Image (cartoon, rainbow, N blue to C red; front, side):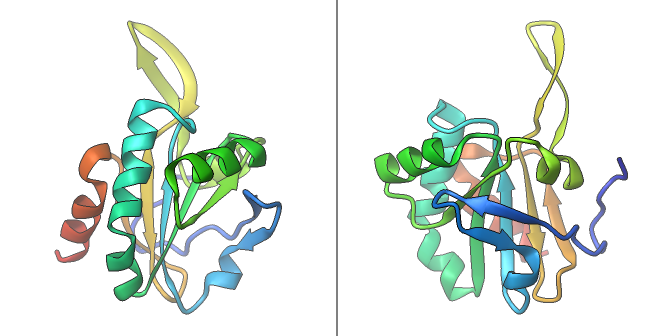
Length: 154
């Protein structure tokens, strides 16, 4: 697996959202994209992150961004998560972890001294031309929107 860096062309993808509708990077050309990778629907950190993005969603739209979340959860799980927290953006289901791997969001994690493979909470900002503008690996779940806007103003 090659490492994704800022300035690289974002890896092309085609995956399904919560409604089974295909979402592809090619369909997003001309828009800036906040592609955020998170471990699991309905867990405390992931819920905090999604709700922070939801609460600041109008600011993302004003700045021309499309916000899309990605996890290995099923489309049904995503529909429930969206419904429960009134999320205004799409969530992509990536059960085979192809998209997660291509964006460097699948890798080794540690918990209680135990090492395992899992989803690395990562946000990739893609510009209108499909290039990686920013990669955020140390995501602050409760203030992720502010973190994204601060990163983009550098």
